[in-house]
Image 1 (cartoon, rainbow, N blue to C red):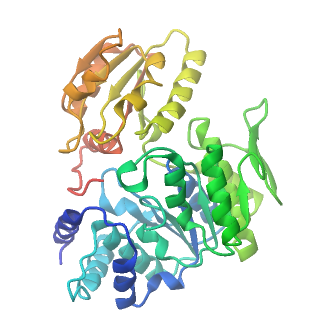
Image 2: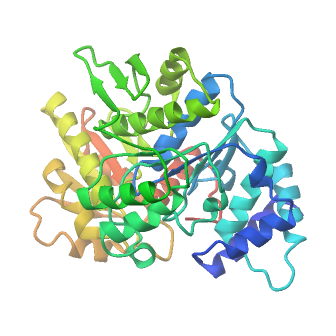
Image 3: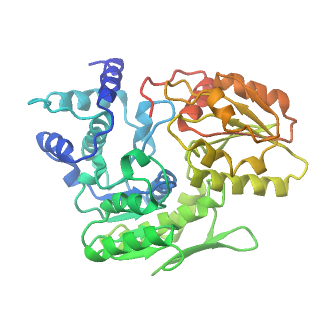
Length: 432
């Protein structure tokens, strides 16, 4: 099987959509020797921040000399971004061989979804690569997510609880907390970030029922800034000072706190890190599409925010920009998927922007520019349209002065379109 044939095969699996449940995953993994059972795992879920937190955890562990597998989703440009060992994407020949191995055991009408097959691929590759630890980001929810076949992780984290994917997880934060709390395992430490009181109580009850020690941001651990813009982490048993974070935005401080608490809790399982690894890992962490600067004069920033909670975090960043750049304007290039809460996303951002350019990612489920414009009927600022993402960026650049900020947000798929065009490379046919 060639790599392109493998991608076509995986792309075809998307016809199965999202299938909540672990039975298919368990059967598939059993047929290839249960590679996940040989792995030491750190498991990270949450509505927002789980990918950034996973990237920070992996970066610190690498600085500590560990061989680290990192599994995340979705990818922006290239499918192999999802599966990395020490920052390097899975090589094409390895992906081809392991997918062929998985296909060979698909008998008796076993029909894994795209995400199940990709997760099984990650488990096989990490086991084959003999990683010291695998950092797994939950794909959707938690309880029935394919990554949740891991029975005894070293520790788990739930970064935030908010409204997203309601058609699968429920229409209240409490219902979503029940689903995400499914990654809490008996006797395994769990770290939780900031969230509403009702969601927090649900997670506490699940942890108590499973005798899982629970540490909460703001109660058991915290991170704060001194006047020299350095961070100090104050945990249950550790204090790490003189820290900086390679990811922009104050919301990343909470993610950093959860990452360090997760590492602190895993210390008891022999996954110790020292202060030097913590400092160097946080300082050098890279995570594409999260307030990522891709251009200057004017500054062009990409951010994957796509739900109301993430929009509020992005708004805080834009407010900070306005304070430090009082004569600059912010131009928002906005595109979203049709099934997302467009009003809930855009309302927190409107006070922070001077102008909006509407666009749409190259996917059938993208909201059209007309649908986006209908959300802005009451806004008095200028609105322009460009269906193709790079045309939208061109329009924004033509409107911006060198000291202005162009922010592209609303969809990771939109960011993938922009990044592929800027790099001059093709996009994987697999999106989402």
